[in-house]
Image 1 (cartoon, helix red, strand yellow):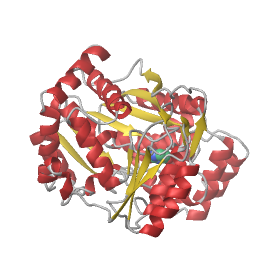
Image 2 (cartoon, helix red, strand yellow):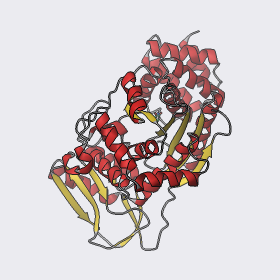
Image 3 (cartoon, helix red, strand yellow):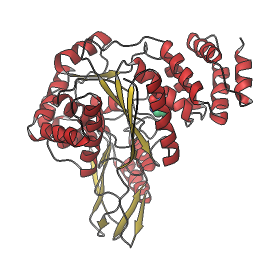
Image 4 (cartoon, helix red, strand yellow):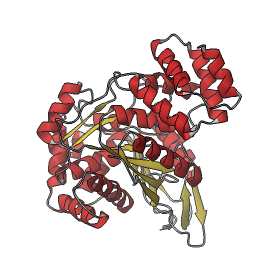
Length: 439
Ligand code: URA
C-alpha cells in the first residue's frame, strides 16, 4: 500500500477501506508518512467527506494508535463529558463537583485553549498550585479516593489525534465533520469511560456554526459510540454568545465557584444542570432528567458540591483558601468598567469576537505552547435579549495595561448588535440526542 494512492482515492471521492485507513493512521503515528502527505489527505477528507463506516474505522484506528485507560477500578460505570469548545465555557469546573457530590465518580482528561476557544486546563491552573499533569496512576488513585480527578490528555492516549490535530490546525482542515468526530471520540474512547455526554456547541463561538452541521456531528459521534458499546448523549447547546458572563481563566474560576455556591449567571447554572443531569442519567443514578436535576440542585443547596470542589483543589495541590477567598486568585492590574454607549435591547454578542479579544488581552493563545495570563479577560454585564440603558455597565475589562484595555474596549463595543424592539434570547439548548443502544 502507498500513501499517495490512498490520498488519490480520497481526492476522487472514493470510500477508503478499513485496511487503508489503518495503514494511513499507523504511518502518520510512526512518522513513516510525512506531514505533507497527511495534510493533503486531511484536505481531501475535508473536501470529499467520509461515510459513517469510514469515520468509525478512522476513530478506531486512532484509538489503536496508543493506550486505552481501564477505569474499572474507579466505578462500575464511569461517565465522561466533553465540550466541542467555546467561549466562557467553564462547565467542567462546576459540573464535575456537582455530579461527583451526587454520587457519580468522575475522571476526565481535558485540553488547553486554542484560538478563540478556552480550555479547562488553563482555567484550573489559574488556581495557585493546581496541578493538571497527573500520571495515569495518580489520576486513577485520586478518582478512587475522592470521586473526582482531572488531568491533561496524556500523550499515550490516541497519539494519532495529537499529530493530526496539530496539522489540521495549520492547514485549515479543522472544520470537517468526520475529522472532528473521530478526533473527539478517539480521545473519549481511549479515556476509558463507559458513557459520554457530548456538549456540542453551535454558533459563531463554536467550531460548528449551523444547527444542521451540529446535528450531523452529534449523530455521527453517537453512531461511533454505539458501534463499540458506549452510550453517548449529545446536547446541542448555543454558542452564539459566550456562556455565562465571565471570559478569562481566573474570572471563569470565580464564576464557577459562585455557581457552586448557588449564585452565578442563570444561563450558566442552567447549562450545568442540563449537562450534569444527562451524566447522572447515563450513570444510572437517576431515572429521569427531573430526578437528576433535583439531585444536582441538592448538592448546591447542601454545600456538598462546593465541598467537593474544595476536595478536588486540595487533592490536586491547589491553594484551597482561594475557594473562599477569591482575592488569592490572580488579579489584573487594570480593571476598566465600560458603560453602554446607547440604550436598547442587546440583540447579540459575537462569541467568536469576544473569544478573540480575550486572546489578545492575553487570556488565550494563538499558537500551541504560548504562555497565557490567568488574570485577564472580560466580564459581560448582560446577555442577548436584555434591555440596557445608556451609561449602565456593559462590560468590565481586566487587562495587563491601559493600552490593551483600550484596544479591547473598542473591539468589544463593535461585537454587540442592538435593537430598539424586544429580541428573544437564543435558546440555551437546541436539542438533546441519546443513544438507543450500546453500553
Ligand atoms: N475538539 C477536538 O478534540 N477535536 C476537534 O477536531 C475539534 C474540537
